Length: 147
Length: 420
Image (tube, rainbow over all chains, first blue to last red; front, side):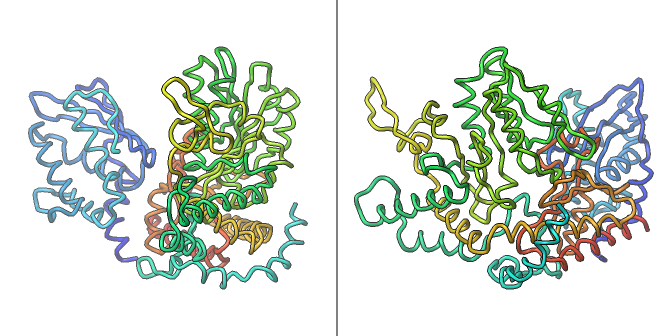
């Protein structure tokens, strides 16, 4: 079960049980819904952006430990960041969870999700909330689907 | 019911040699992540015995050619094997005639055929199509599309918390506007066995035809379409130990004769000119284009294989596994069954407190145990129970009590991992 503990690390289980920023932001400047039709997981992300800085970010939804923890960790990572940095951080995160690159220090706490690379069917769980945030920042209103 | 099962058990142990049956499935002889494969995703698709694999290989390497075409030897042999399989399906379903057996791509296409051809000519504006809450998407969406096209209304029979159809509501919903009933025989999400014979009787009393979705029931139960008196029965090859990509639609000849073709093309015609086409007789009328030839031949081999080991014995063995798994899993704290109908077959669907089914599926896979986690293409069922997904273990003839024990041990590891 050692390899399973690489995927389900303490930090991930902790964020799954006690997700951070699991709330609605009202009013918010940006919002989007994400949906994984494969498993039915849903996430809604809310952002408050002022002067191109993400001053607040939160999420609501229902999903597996990987998608809940990823959404929770993402909100922590994005709070206070300039909007311009989101795409770079997402690409970095995406490359790590798909196994295209090794985690670097710039990824911070998000690196705990690197274990997902050994579970190809779970990559979409880890990226669902990120896709929703990107859609929200681009003011796309339709639900983002991972499929 | 339970008395009957007890009666059956000793007999089954005499008749079914499970280790010998397992030997016939080459795919089962492997390890997944260093653990023996425990394949419990049979409701999604079942593994294939050597006899089916051989039948397909023998056709391709020995006598393959297109069917119903050539005067040459190979075409005649392929045609004989193809049509021979139709006879095997007729016997499997106890249909009155091979003219009533249509080969399709699968249950989904069989239902689409009826919705489009029968529905298109019998369901009009203001009419109703009656389905149930526990249908698979394949027995919802084709009817929804039909109703949208025709301005008809899709009505749905509700279920109890246990996952049983409410028959009084079913009876109430049957009315003069109801043009067809489409009902799942055995629910893939709940394991509920529906009283289709009684439902057919009630519908027929009002001259309403009934389509039975037999995708899940065909591998687990003895099917007799004449005894059921269903108007249509659909099932898939890949769930009855045959290949994927082939399925069957049984229809009463009088319906099929009156119905317009579903698709146009080769093989479904008698004569074609640019002014007019005369359609072929049954069953060719509904089999446009080159069919899945080896799929049909493989399906025939699968039904031969099943009849040799006796579907009755298979059903009793699987019922024993279901009862055992239900009792074992019930011991796990925080585990809740989704679907607790009195009459069930083939599978257990469940959720665990605080643990998403996808996480269960991933962890079980690392223990070599393959189950399904998700909405099982039955999102309305998930909505009915207020869950996004369930975990589902489903059984086939080659499964054993030891494999149920492996499932239980793996589920305990899931809890251990999440509760730490």
